[in-house]
Structure formats: structure tokens, C-alpha cells
Image 1 (cartoon, one colour):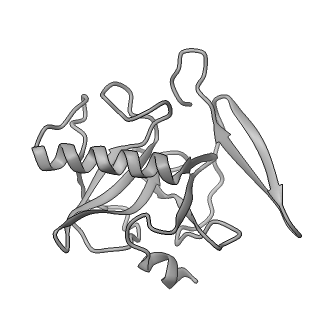
Image 2: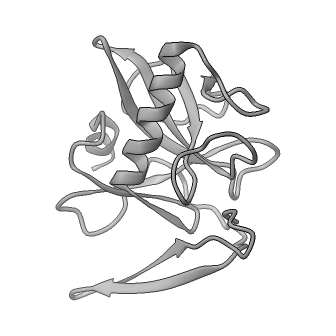
Length: 169
């Protein structure tokens, strides 16, 4: 199962990703990857940290394809346009078989220092998120709503909502 998750390049069949307690839809992932790819191709980074920028993967996270890796923030309420990037990132390879392709996602939430942990992916037809990361204890912050879904087994997911200032926590 882990090998199958690692082999899934791109967002075909992706239902959602979960970074700590935040669930991102395929549409949000696609939008962030498209903007990151567009900016990388045009060589026009944005924000104080110049996104998208190369991700060197010192954490040795497992992605669906080989490097080079670039990271770009995924944010609530549209597409990252500068300012505070939040904790979560999409990761893409800008030239995989002559295409810019999503290869995974990661978060600062729960990581030590300024490091990253892998986000889990839920693919169409799978009942639970899959990931190659080890489970870690994380601190939940921000405003969130809880949605319970399930058939024979109940799964609890938390979807982030903007706080009163409009920024994600």
C-alpha cells in the first residue's frame, strides 16, 4: 500500500490531502500546483520567502517522483499571492517528462524547528488517508469545524476555516 501511494504522480485520482489537522481538496491542491508551476516557469517568485522555491528535502521525505522539488504554499480562500504562507505546502517537480507535476505535500505543523512532515493523501476509492510518514503528536491551533463521515468505520476529519482576520491557523 505504501509503494502504491508513493507511485501516484500528479493529482489524477486524488481526493484530498491532510496536513496535520487541515484537509485540502483536490481542487485546492490543483490550484496551488498550477500557480506554483506558472510562477516557477516564468521565474517570478512572490512573497518574502520567494515562492515557489527549491526544496532540498533535508528531511528525506518520500515523494512520488524524483527531484528537483519546488514548494509552494497552499492557503485558504484562494491562491497564495504573498504574505504569510501558513504551514502547508504542495511539492512539485517542474520538469517531469516535460511537465510540471504534483509529487506530494508537506507541513511545518508538528515538525521540529523549521522542518517538514509529509501530509497524507486520500485517493479515490480508498477509505483512509495513506502516507509514508510516521505518525506524530501535533498541537492543534486555530478555528476548525469537525466533520464525521463513515460507513462501517467512523473517520474524524478536521477542515480548517479562516479565523476572524481571514488567515489560516
